[in-house]
Length: 345
Image 1 (cartoon, rainbow, N blue to C red):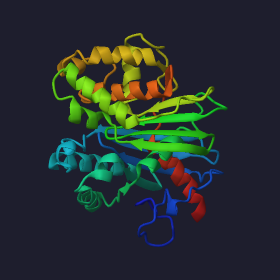
Image 2: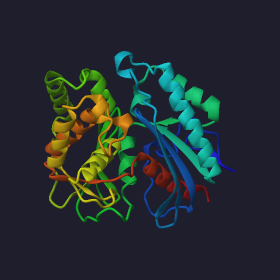
Image 3: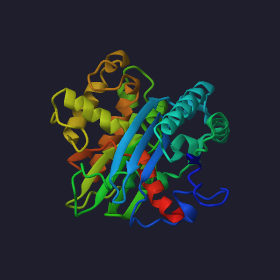
């Protein structure tokens, strides 16, 4: 029997307001994992992401099926604080499709989380009800701090990423928010979510094609003001960049010969290269940005804003480079389910 619920099924009682991932705010210590096949759906402001994966007792994650659909749930949201009908329909269809894929793939538990735009939208509850009626899957809306923690957990056990004895710092840039989380091993030291996202900044400031210099200036000032005081990285830290913005920037840099042609997971993206890509993208009309090798065409309209956020975050952190990771919230969800499953077996 497939469990697909609000991340609190598996507790042997009907769910009310408790969260499976974050029950009463208590963090579950990482000791072991219940081996099984899990599915997580991340409903973001810009895209819907699916991960179906097997997890073993030692936390080794093997992806079975992955999916991405850019549905732009936050389309025009930042104008009137409401999810528009077309965006809701696109996103609900993607979620329904991914639920079917997860079931066919043999996932024993399916969970979905909603992030920035669903935390804020006036009609977010209506959309969640629509999804539940159409595919029977509740979406758990998580806080920015919980989103940051899941992004961190999703990058804690991947043996393809460089090891570190120092701090592990994860920067996750999404469509509506940017999370920065620091930790030492399994212990999270600090986590914060900023209302800075590639779609949010684009719709707020970058209205011309290509963006005007004045628009770029206003966006830069806004990003810097929202970030505020960010402490530089301590020596020996590992800085990881998650989210579509970082991955696409690295993909473009690789296609242009700016970084190593090896696998993107674990690749190093220098701050100087990000600056060069911003200078390129800000001068190109959208129709030409869509043709840039390595860049997803559906992300071309928001890549300037996303790159600007990454540039400023790295400048605040005094980071000369960032390690690219495709892992994110959905990986953290899978690990959280595998840990939580221990309580019912």
